[in-house]
Length: 60
Image (cartoon, rainbow, N blue to C red; front, side):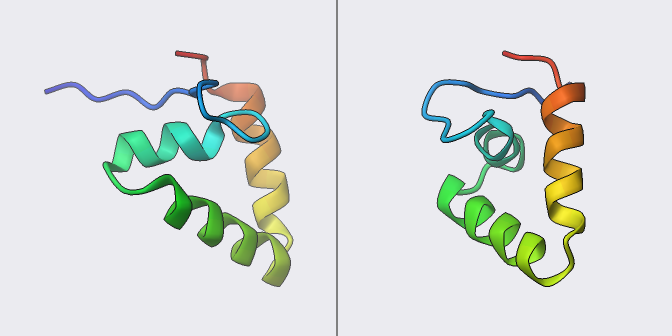
């Protein structure tokens, strides 16, 4: 099976990165959103990573 990571705009709050990552990892999107907020607030790297993913990942 060849899984690919995409941004999914359906159900997205901002750019669909968390929704796409949750679908790729087969976990609940709420967990991914909480994890991304925690990473963004504690390190600041999460904001840069989110923006980069929003620009680089193709839309499904």
